[in-house]
Length: 372
Image (tube, rainbow, N blue to C red; front, side):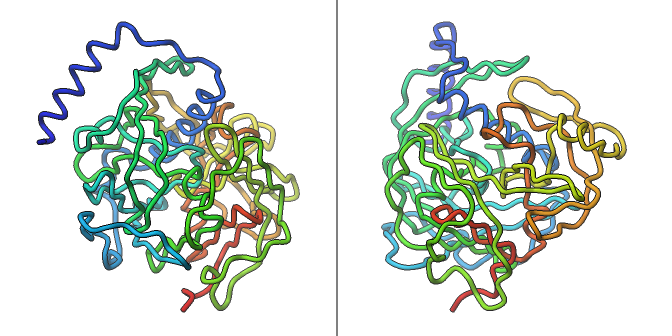
């Protein structure tokens, strides 16, 4: 079926249902979606719809545009999937090819800071998925129509994924032209136990096959005794820092301790999908961070507002010093529980590669040369 017919059917269905949408406020699932939207706001802030014109990109990894017509596979060992790493000034965007229902590949934002995976509504113009009744999600000053679909057959490149429900919302800067069709969050990434994100080689390496979904309420605080799975750390790997991993009914968050000068630690989300790092407005005020230039517009879902820009001064993750940079002061209070900021790909990519070990609670900033 052509994408035009799918698009028309979707619009007609939304028009029929809009007047009868159930209202969604502070349920656990809504809170998780709020958290993902909060992270997404920051990932949109620095490029938005004009990203493609300003971005620079190194040669894409081989296989980025591989066909989705062949069978996906369940990996038995560490397996690499190609990424696309783009830069626009100081910001960095990381996307990954996805196959959904035998179609694609479609580029998705790789976002460890998003507790839950999301599809943009335009993505439904390209695929036909089982859809439940829409709902209306209220944000402060905004309202967002949310669709709910079930994905039975999909993969990260050639790596098969478990079927799961996914929320679908209209995301500014997504779904049109060369823009990503959605984002892959930590709900998916954490099921592999550990993943390596190599910004230089433009590769995502998963440790092996997906494990079961962590039970809601599961929490891993700091570095545990489990070793990092083989095939993820290479020669010259740097020291690990603690990662606090929490799983709720609707997603998984990964926080790491951040300090500003001698003050802290403060829990920040490790957000590969955030093009630039950010700090919450209350924490920026508490630290007396200096303003830098004019406020920047933040496009969210149904509304636009301005956020101040501040200078980080000396800062770092645990004992690892990060280069000073400008940050937006705009983390909503309903970001991942307890988060007071984001460590984005602008900071993470400076180390060449990282390993997020959800299973043991470790973040490696600088994962060494690519394992053989």
